[in-house]
Length: 305
Image (tube, rainbow, N blue to C red; front, side, top):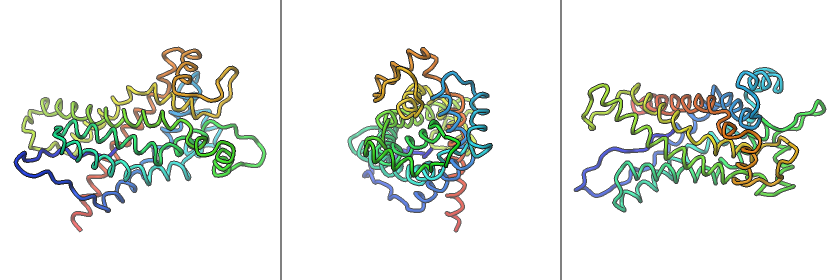
């Protein structure tokens, strides 16, 4: 998670956009790599398994993932290279796009909060159509594709086969759902985090908006925002279904967002749209701890240099 700048500005001074610092982009990429390589990918794999296999409970998903992937390595399916490519690029893409959109919105007269929300939404959409579309697709392919007992087929080989067969559309299958997810993710994460910050200020008696919250209070507010933003889990389940390699009788071959939603409802009812929400909440909290608290610590370290 990347924090957006909401520092109040003097209305009488001209609006200036902060220069994008290369070190901050590098820190974002590094922290994303750490996040996904530790607890991030296991949460992602379990979440994806439950969204694709909606009859499995979380304990069943954990056991099947362990058996399917050969122990602990099963929880890191799709990490190399797809999750690493995504982690190394999405933070920089988000920060650049969000800051540019936020600046344009502020120049148009919008307040910091709405400018930040729109910046986050636009940044999330940009993420989806640049790097996250094909990365999330291939990560889902790795978790859901059948792996025979014969010679192992590498993830790169699978990607090449899909590209040769279906072209750029095939390798970006489900990208529109990813864009909707990222748009609502960042819009709601930002807004809900601000609501949580207001609640923490009231609870602690810190009504001075110019006085920043402590690092731990910011982590708590962002974690609340990240967890509550999982209200959009239905679009995540739809995204997984569109990208899943699981075959089922009667399942449409070429799924759109609408046909995928219809198929999920026919098979599992309303509860099917919320499969995997618990590990996704865990993922959101872990991302927050890494990107907010970790980001503050690392940036403070380089600032002292």
